[in-house]
Image 1 (cartoon, rainbow, N blue to C red):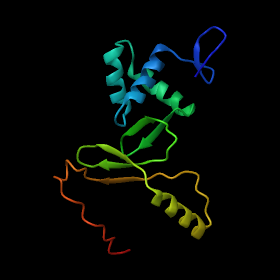
Image 2 (image 1 turned 90 degrees about the vertical axis):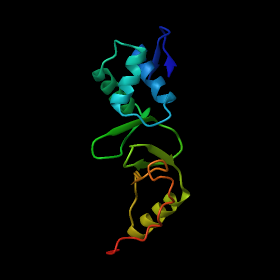
Image 3 (image 1 turned 30 degrees about the vertical axis):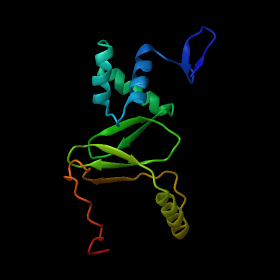
Length: 151
């Protein structure tokens, strides 16, 4: 963000309206990934004049400006988060919908190996795991993956 000659705040030459600032603040404060409807629900608690269309328009703008990442974690929902510098991946509980972030150096090792073996240069890695979080699995330890029979 920067201040232009009229002392107005802007992001890459786009004015930072009160509603844009509100949406960015909510995304920054979020302790979980938000879909557009949850972002709207939180925003309308603070500003009754904001509309769902405004939320969708600004999410699209934030994505274009590189401020927000959009992740599709199931067949229906897109989730949004402020872009951070650290590469991370997601685990999604298929029972409660909880999204858990994780980092692993093994992903980069796998990527290096696959690129080398397949003579392929990846521009983007998208990884999400589906299963059950600790709450929904009743605290049971995960069964070790044995692979599919046709592997």
